[in-house]
Length: 129
Image 1 (cartoon, one colour):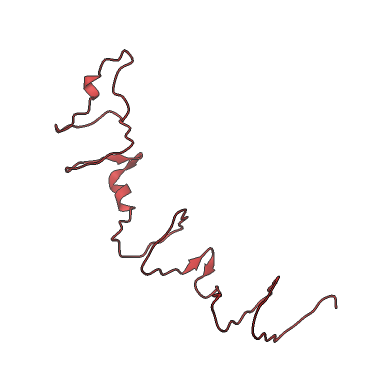
Image 2: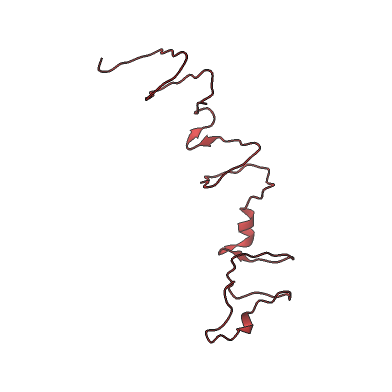
């Protein structure tokens, strides 16, 4: 927590935070870690109305649909995951599994290397030969 002293080093008792006495906090405090053990009222968090903020938060026991664009930087762990689009592609329709027995591809494709037991080409245009 940042120091609550005036420049002279004396305490500013108008803005002092007490450990166990009920208070209405009007000063700005900065904490590295904060644990609220008893019932507390928070008006704003990170500059946003707390009620609006908490309505946008999903808890670990949330059971519902998450909408909107999400940019995930960390790891997602889920028992079940239903995705309609992934990086702009329909999922799973626009994806090919590396473990598929049979794959039917349409459109123009360019491969550096193909390994397969059997390849059937139904339409072939070869330029430059």
